[in-house]
Image 1 (spheres, rainbow, N blue to C red):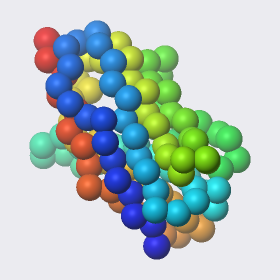
Image 2: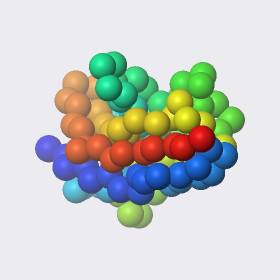
Image 3: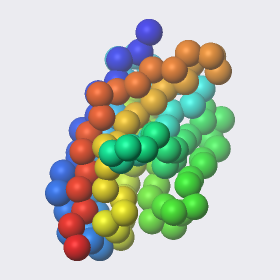
Length: 116
């Protein structure tokens, strides 16, 4: 099992930046995929960014060029650097770990609010 704890959310003005952190309870070397998802009221969680253990990165079209996902193996942490934030980036951001392409683990979420 993997426990995930997110932090770094908050209130920021449009055009600003935030960095989200997701700390895992175990080494992330063996975690195939770690990703960030966003959920807004009445909607399903959508993928924002994902990083594989092989070094691949995948981003939603809406955040390409603005967000960067990275994995810090020494700290068992995944980051999401969010720049040039827009009001439509508002939502609850969840970290997910996929182990063995079968098991998914989720964090509790962190709220990001971007004001105009």
